Amino acid sequence: MSAMPPTLGFVLHDVARLLRKRFERQAGKLNLTRSQWQVLAYVAYNPGIQQGALADILEVQPITLGRILDKLQADGLVERRHHATDRRIWLLQTTEAAQPVLEKMTQIGQASRADALTGIPEPERDRLMTLLSTMRINLINACEAAMAEPSVREEERVDG
Image (cartoon, rainbow, N blue to C red; front, side, top):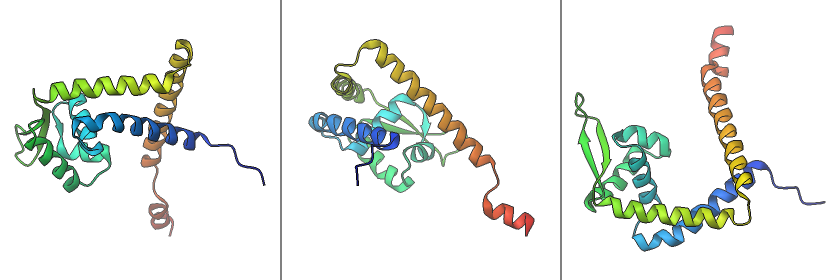
């Protein structure tokens, strides 16, 4: 029996895993866990994001995110602000103290991507990003379309 060639999903997953691993090795110098730098990056790129929305994006339980944010807040890297009209909602911001950490994270990310893209000419890099962006949009649209369709159980109730 011959080995099956790797699938697109396998290769994408493995490349993402190796990029994270490469980043993590370097980011260890920042004294942040993977979860902490991931949360810090999302807050930096989405200033004012609601804590609940961030938990959804990261696909973690709100209590898990709350603990990570507690640590980042205690370290002075993130602050929670009350929503203007709903005191139950926390809006997240990075602090000024987070800027040097974010700059270092950016440098580490650039180095990790450079390692991954070694030997790939610029036009092919651009084409890769275009293709991956198209795949991303296709999958977002497919997920939205699937969510709009009635589930099998809903159909059974209507028909049954």
